Structure formats: structure tokens, C-alpha cells
Amino acid sequence: MDDERTVRPDGPDAATNSPDATDATGGPAPGRVTALLARLTRMLLATSGEGASEVEQTVARAASGFGARSSMVLVPDGATLTVALDGRTETVAVRAFPDVARLDKVAALKPWAHRVSLGGTPLAEAERRLAAIDDSPAPYPWWLKGLGIVLFTVGFAPLMQPTWYEIGSSALLGLVTAGLAVAAGRWPRLARVLPLVASAAVSVLVLEVFARTPAHGGAVLLMLPALFYFVPGDLLSAAATELAAGFLTTGAVRLVYAVFLLLQLYLGVMLGVYATGGDTSALFDLAAHADLPRWATFLSWVVFTVGTVLAFAAPWRLLPVLLGTVYLTVAVQSGATKLVGEVGGTFLAAAVLGALATAVARGPGRPPRLLLVLPGFFTLTVGSLGMRGLTSLAGGHPVRGFHDLLSMVTIVVAIAVGLLLGSVLAQRPRPLPES
Image 1: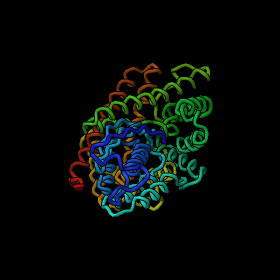
Image 2: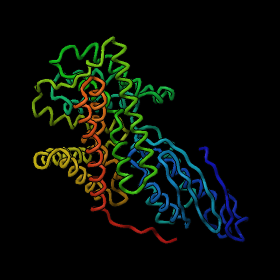
Image 3: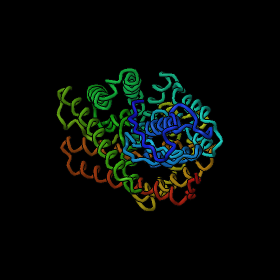
Image 4: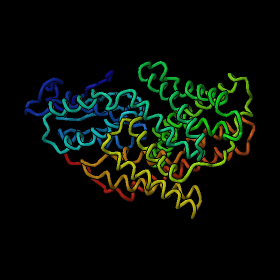
């Protein structure tokens, strides 16, 4: 961890505090407490792809367990952490790239932070347990993560087109994106351009192999399930939620990054069009005739949720709970859409999901809110509208393209405000313990 640290003594006895020893009263050394909180901050940032609004509160509660006070200035990929303990103040700059690839760490950090916040946990034990979480291997081997991405793709496919052809083509295309995603985990250089490479590969395969006839549906509809793993719909909504909650810097930066990822995917699709020698008119967006029975559509959400657990390393024991949030979100969205339209239905579904996740997440033994929200949130499919809008514009369909882009903006805001409203309604204010 390449943290930058400055130390500012605030009391007459501050010079006696060594970073590697206990203080004069036998309490935890300020330097070691700061290092512990800096590591916790880095871990929280690294798992904050869905928003960083709870990072500061979690670190502050952990600091209070050692009699310290902390404050920070946050951006999505970094934080300036200030820790005050026994008249000594230290400031550390922490950097970490936000992601949601290791939800098992999110689940493990919650009980650790709660136990530390209660006080009485020896510093050495807290350090050891946090290091064990940080250094833990992925809960599933690489091939299970790849299988999870394929299942994630197949489970999402009926939402684009409820056809057997969509499911079959998505399974094959999902193998390609899964292979690239697993390879990117071993070659960091590929990870930097993964959305571009994946969308270009999927675009070439769809245009050359799967979208040979309009009877199978539009090329974009065939591409989207395989690219859904990379579509930044979660980042778009997380950015909107942070802006609505008053986290202006983190929300604005995350929004810019989400748009950049969306443009990478769009450019990859266009490169695929040019590589196949076609023109942009190939990017038609016509749905095929539905031939998928209702039971298959119903079961697709089971496949989707299992894929989410494996692809994002969520604890397997949470599968039944996550299935419940997914089916509840789908049911509320479907029912409310018939009554108040797509935007209203999405808003109500997001509000119910936010309230339920916040209420269930209460208590140290409960799953973290992020784990409860994420699979249900994916069902609201924000980012795919952005991809469809951009490709429709490129394909010479400006009316349809601008309609999809406008729908994306509207639904992003509806999801963000709905999740925020649900969280506010279900949340119990908890003041920080006094040091």
C-alpha cells in the first residue's frame, strides 16, 4: 500500500508516541491505528463500485473502537484520511480502484467493523483479522467465475428477446466474454481495455454468425446480453444516487467514468462493424417473435442470480436471500409498470428494493446492504438503454436512438432516487459512539 503520510503532533506528549508501540498508558499506538484504518479505507474503496457513501461512516466507527476520531475527503478512487488519537494527528492518502468483483470481502468486512467499533478488541487481533480478509483468495476458482459470467449472460437474455435463439447465442457469446474477463484477471494490461476488446469481439461474432437474418432479431439485441457484464448501469445509478445524496465530487467523477465505459463499449461495437466490412445499418434493433414459454422466463432469474453470485464472488449461503430480492424487484416493477408506466414502475421497484435491503441489513450478522441491492438492481437494466441508444444513432435511427438515451437518463434518476428514498424510509439514525 503506497500511502502518503504526514504526522502533526497536537499535544505536549505527542513526541513520545512511536508508530510501532503502545502509548504511555498501554493503549494502541496512534501509528498502528492509522495504518489499520488506512487499510480498511483502501479495502472499502476497492469494493465501492456501487457507491462510497458508507465508507466514511464505517471507518469512523472502527476508529471510535480504539478511542480515535477520523475524518476523510473522498473521491471514488481515493481518500485523504485524518486520524486523531492521544493528541497525535496523522493524515494518510489512500488510493484504490472501485469495483464489485469481490463481494465476499464486503460480507466479511461488516462483522469485522462492527466488532471493532464496540471497543475492547486488541489492536493486534484487529490487524490480524483484517489482513486475513484482505489477503483471502477468491472463494471460487477461475472456471466457476467464468461459468458465472455465462449464467449471468444467459439469465439476462430473455429480457432482451424472449426467444430460444437469444438464449443459445447468448450462451456462446457469454463464453467469449467470460474467457476475456478471466484472462483480464491475470493480465492487467488487458483489463484496462477489456470493455473495448469484449464489445469488438462480440460485435464481430454477432454480425458474422448470429445476426444473418432479421428473423433472429436485431444485432444489438443479440449483443447486449453478452456485454451486460461490462455495461456500467450500476455505476450510472450509483453516480446519480451519490449526487442526489449530496456527494457531489464522488458522484460527478463516477458519472464521467461510467460514460467513458459506455463509450468504450460503443466504440468496440463500431469497430466490429468496420472489421466485418459492413455499414452501420447492420445495427438494427428489431425484436424477433417471442417463442419462450413463461416458465423458462421465470426460471431465467434463477440462472441470472446464480451467475451473479459466482461472477461477483458473493457468499453462496446468500443465494436464497438474493433470489428473493430479485423476484421481488421483478414483481414490483412488472406490476407497477402496468399501473403507472415504465418510469413509475422502475422508481417504485427501486424504492421497495432500497427499503427492503436497508431493513434486512440491520444488525452485524445480516448481509451488507450492497449484497442485497446488487442482484435486484441489475434487473432494472439501466446501462443497456444507453448502448441501444448509441448504436441506434450510429445505425441511422436518430429518433429511436435519442428516445433510448432519454429513457436511460430518466430511468437512471428514477432508480437512484428510488433507492435513496427507500433507504431513508427504512434507515434508523445511529449516532457515532462518543470517544
